[in-house]
Amino acid sequence: MAHIELLNDLPGIRGLMAFRPETAEPLNQLADVLLRGPNSLSPGERELIATFVSSRNDCFFCQTVHGAVAAYHLGGGEQLVLDVKRNPELAVIPDKMKALLAIAGKVPRGGKEVTTGDVARARESGATDMEIHDTVLIAAAFCMFNRYVDGLGTWAPTDPDMYRQRAPMIARDGYASSVPGVSAQES
Image (cartoon, rainbow, N blue to C red):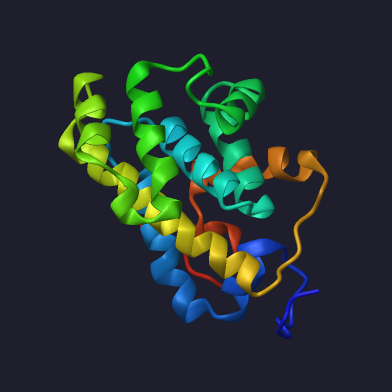
């Protein structure tokens, strides 16, 4: 049970956004720009960054929903998502993603944990400044989203099929469309 009366039975951030649609709209816009907007990193790669950071923050709802969306974008790669959450250095992903995930994994501990060596590794692996920027911003945003979800004690379904079923709709329509009463922005 959430720490506050949400007046709805929606799980995780969806319940919070339905409770406060005026803050949900800009938060969803941010998520859609970061995870779905034009970018040299694929939506699946960006969802993988969000999943990884959410797993490091121990936010079950966010790591599970974004993991399902990442797996959907990556062609059903649920094992890949699990491997990345366990240890991205051992996962079968490009060196560039390993370097970006190393950066993303430091952001939850503190922004100053990211070093010039981390950035140099990412650049040497082919990451652009925009990709490094967006990795840090995705990681920072998901620290906020994770603390929002868990700080208000929201509930999360434990059945992975619920997340798998939502993933195609989120991948197609974005985040704002997944919350009743919150308007979706034109893409």
